[in-house]
Length: 154
Image 1: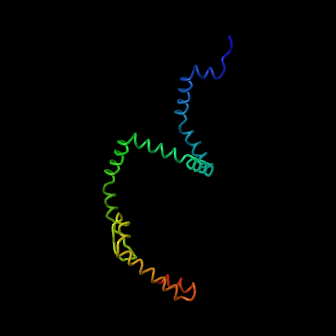
Image 2 (image 1 turned 135 degrees about the horizontal axis):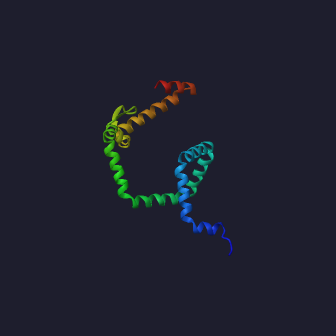
Image 3 (image 1 turned 60 degrees about the vertical axis):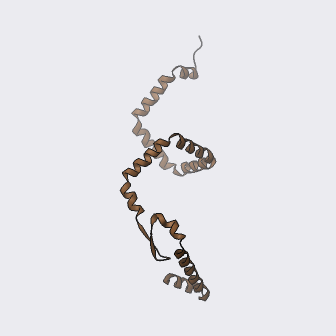
């Protein structure tokens, strides 16, 4: 009777081997975590370079997997967003009502209205006037040092 090799042994005892591996990992979670942490700290540059290369070479695959995940788990994602909003509703509303001061046209607007504010006529006119002012300073100044001094003071 011929003796069996490693491959045959693994195939026959697949469940036992799997259970032993999971038991080993369960018993040595802390040791494995420490070793992994040390390895990641020592090889940080190499790992980040590998990760960057992987992302660049598999950009389309990653996008496709994200798209597929979002389609398959739509309810889960919506539920998590809703839970996050309910949990942080006060902070979110407070951030939305924060007023920002615009130095160009000297007015205030909400954080969410930033893009709309930049398109307003008042802001555009103030920006054009400011640009003309600095162009006048540049053309009138005789040297770059004068321009820098006037720019800081303006």
